Each structure stands twice: as structure tokens, then as C-alpha cells.
Length: 271
Image (cartoon, rainbow, N blue to C red; front, side):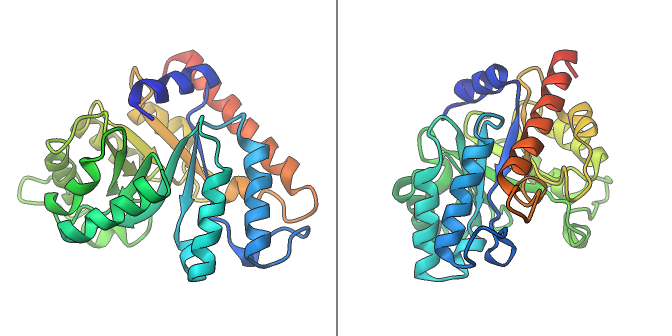
């Protein structure tokens, strides 16, 4: 999916919601068997409940890889369920030397045909380039994250007072234009979103942390929304686990609809 189509979908749906399929067998609602078959069936139900309210899905591959070959099969079945009308993200956080990275890119862009994959930047440009070389595909680079451990490295400042995450982003924007490169920016520290927007004024941000992690949707929008919207806000647990009972599907739909309405309101105000 190209940038123009993504922006058009956001405007049409009045939504920049990305639903994260961080589906955990141990947390499946009552109606499902706690196995890979139940996991895929749960994903199908969540997709059906939320597809009208979101423009994107993000599949966290760790929740599938843990089960080995059966987990990969469940990942491929889940990918087949995802609507082609949506922007589809493999949340795999890959990076390695160039030849290895090329194999990762082939897996997620050719074999499974995702639109985008999340990538760790700290091995440098040659570890990212094989992803960037795929026409029509996106690389979503980890920039500043919302976990506690982000303080260990990302927030360290240099002699000029510039944090490491901003230095990384400043370098990365020279690797690819906003049609191919996006950044992961956590929602829980709005001041960092503001720094990132100044560093990458035209790139889209994938913003996790609204919902279960406590990030504010309005604060996110105030600090990094652009004229082209410029953000996808990911919500995982607060939607897919909105209920653990038989009403899980309607609860997920209600939560997705609520977020979509909040986004439509924000878009109407032009924040």
C-alpha cells in the first residue's frame, strides 16, 4: 500500500486506528480452545469485529513463533484472513547483516506479503537497506519506545543534549523518503513525540501505548499529527481482550468503534 492510499483510507474512514493482533493462547476468551486452532479462530472473530473501524492491522510475530512450525502456520493463516483493503504490518523487529536481512525481507514481503515490517536500527544502514529496497513496501524503524528499558539507551543524551533516539532518527531520514519509511514512537511520553516530529516532519509514526499502557490519544495527536495525519495509533490488548467472556466480539467492536469516534472528532477539529 502506498502513502497516498493510506492517507485516503484514513480520511475516508475518519480513523487512524491500527489493531494489534497480539493474540495469546493463554488469554483466549471462553468460547475458544486454548490451542493454535482456537488462536486463528479468535483472530478471525476480532478481524470481523474491527475491520470497519480501523485502517491497519499489526501482527506481533512473537505470539506465533513461540509455537514453532505450527505457530508459523497459524501466522500464515492469520495473514490470509487480513483484508487487503487495510495496511498490514508484521511486527517482527528484525535486523542483521545485509544478506541475513534480505532473507527476513523476503519472508515478510514476498512469502507473506505484508505491507510493512518493524525493524531495529542499531546495526546501521546496511542492516536496514534490504527492507527499503522493496518497491511499495514500508520499513517501520524503532525510534523511541514506551517500555521502561528505553531509558537504558534511547534517552541517553550527547554533549549537545540530543537524545540517542533523535540522533538515530536524524540519520535514518536520509535513508528513505516518507513513502517507504515510518517510525515507531511510544505514546506514553508526549514530549518525545514532539522531538521526533521535529526530526522527521513528513514521516508517518506508528504509535503504540494508547489504551492498556496509558497513553493519551489527544496528547499523541497534539504532539505529532500532521496535515496528512501522519500517525497510526496501535491498540492491542484494550481491544482484543476487551472481554474474556462470550461477549468478547461485541466488546472488541465497541472498543474499536469508540476509538474511531474519538479519532473522527480529533480529525474534525484539525488537531
